[in-house]
Amino acid sequence: MQFLAVSCIWPCLTSSAATGVLEMSAATESGIRLSGHTLDKATKAKVTLENYYSNLIAQHIERKQRLAKLEETLKDESLSEQQKQEKRQQHAQKESEFLRLKRSRLGVEDFEPLKVIGRGAFGEVRLVQKKDTGHIYAMKILRKADMLEKEQVAHVRAERDVLVEADHQWVVKMYYSFQDPINLYLIMEFLPGGDMMTLLMKKDTLSEECTQFYIAETALAIDSIHKLGFIHRDIKPDNLLLDARGHIKLSDFGLCTGLKKSHRTDFYRDLSQAKPSDFSFFCSPASSPMDSKRRAESWKRNRRALAYSTVGTPDYIAPEVFLQTGYGPACDWWSVGVIMYEMLIGYPPFCSENPQETYRKVMNWRETLSFPAEVPISEEARDAISRFCCESDRRLGYSGRGIDDLRSTIAFFRGVDWEHIRERPAAIPVQVKSIDDTSNFDDFPDVKLEIPSAPISQDGEVIYKDWVFINYTFKRFEGLTQRGIATKK
Image 1 (cartoon, rainbow, N blue to C red):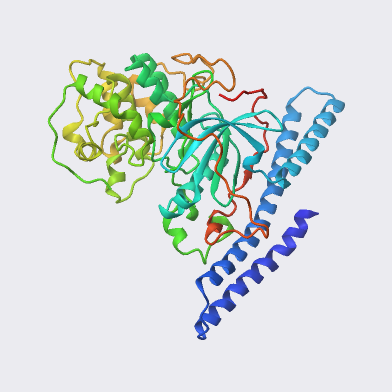
Image 2: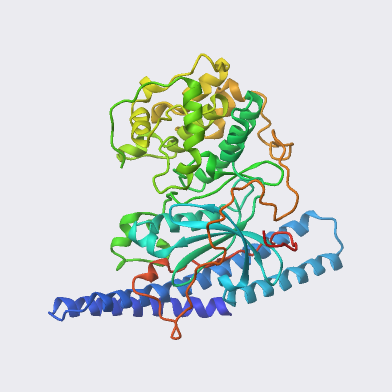
């Protein structure tokens, strides 16, 4: 019934909203000057209405799909009619609970902050506990003002969208997203194994067997988001998280780009035509060459500082991304080759004393990509790295075959059980004491534990230009993380 009502009213509302915008355009053409604030509020009203009813229709479709999926599973099970009816009733109860959850307003006050476990250029990551359930999550907090000032809105939208769509084992699962006047919040599963950067700093180098395992899992994760139409653009060890069993999950889609208009920066420079469906480094002179030992020491000394700085490191970025002349999914496969080199050698192939020199080396990779004789690796490993770090139109994955390229043409990956790799023991077991164990993460004692937020105004008015974050809120239907009683660290 609700769906029919929405279907009937939807054309009227969109027509009404469009008429309002046309009338305002006519008023502007006839000489009446409207302020930017008035135009902004009119466009906000139009997009808000369209998004509201578009979401209702989408929710109805999703509900029908979940019911169809349930009925399909009941066909395959040897259950009695009574048992099937019980499962249908359980499903209906869960749908009712989800509707109540969708109507509820989620905010930072619903979570108890336990510890800061990560920092970035635009925000922080905290370990939190949901007060009403005891579930443990990782809360990523992004400052809206920074997103607007640095024109990162498109990337924020792409990150949120890929986390909504990529609901599978290779990507960190997001359960909720919401906002307040100051921040955007992503509530995600907490992966207690830490990240690959920390593991590499502990181990210095990995064996070829371990490297094969982690690169194969990384490749499967990247292939999964490429199939959804997203390019990560920021594949690096910091963004390869490890779950409680030591298996990889892809995270941090802050530089991700997708196929929608709302994933492009220029879309936010003129939002008057928005629809519900839309939503540099410089060269420096070459420094004196370093042997592999000095390069490894320099890399480890500077690595963490680069991870938390606004500058970051260009070590893992493909040359075509720097050129800004166009690039595709192949840029993520370049990053895989750089990470593989670092796992085996102890530092990335283009690392230098400063980002400018690294940039120069990346751009001149044909001359600067070399393998030190004092750190011997197999010919198969060299070939694999060279097939990742090469011209974009010759690179592994360029043809769109993704994982099939690795399976069929690269000797280094011979013997990988691609279908069952995640069910097998990880190459390096992870020690996790509890569901809120943060021993595999850095400490940030200088950061206040309280989450900076602002109360919502009495009339519910959103600050000027803040509505570019419309439709950011999300709640996942599927089951949540395990329960547990956590204590403040």
